[in-house]
Length: 195
Image (cartoon, rainbow, N blue to C red):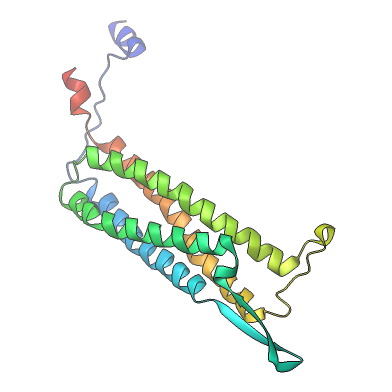
C-alpha cells in the first residue's frame, strides 16, 4: 500500500541505471549533423547567390537577364542561409565540448533554444524562395503570370537545386533538437534531487 501511495504522489524513484557516457554517441551525432548542416546551407547560399542567366531576344543587342537579386525572396534566402551557416560554424566548438563533457546541461538548453530560432529562420527563408520557384515553374493563371522557366531554364534549375540543401538543413535542425532533448532526458537531474 505504501508503494502505491508513493507512486501516486510521485515519491517513487526510478531504479533504471543511467551510464555516465551514454550521451557521447548523441553528442557525436550532434557534431556530425552540424557539419552536414554547414555544408548544406553554405552550398545553398552559394548556388543561389551565383544563379543568373542572360537570353538574347531577336538580336544580340536586346537581352533579358535573370539574376537571384532581382527577387527579394531569393536575397532573403541567401542571407538566411549565410546566417545559419555562420551560426552552425560557431556552435561546432560547443558540440565538441559536449562530446568531451557529456554532462553539460546549461549549454545544451541554450543550443536547443538557438537551434529552434535558427530552424524558424531557415524555414521562413526556404519557404519564401520555394514560393517564387513554384511561380517561376508554373505561373499563376488567375493573376496572368506566365511561367518563365520555359525561357530561363538554367536559372530555374539552379534555383530549384539550391533549395535542396536548405531543406536538408531544416531536417538536420529537427534532428538536432530531438537529439538534444534525448541527451537532456538521459542526464540525471541532480539539481532537482537536491531540492
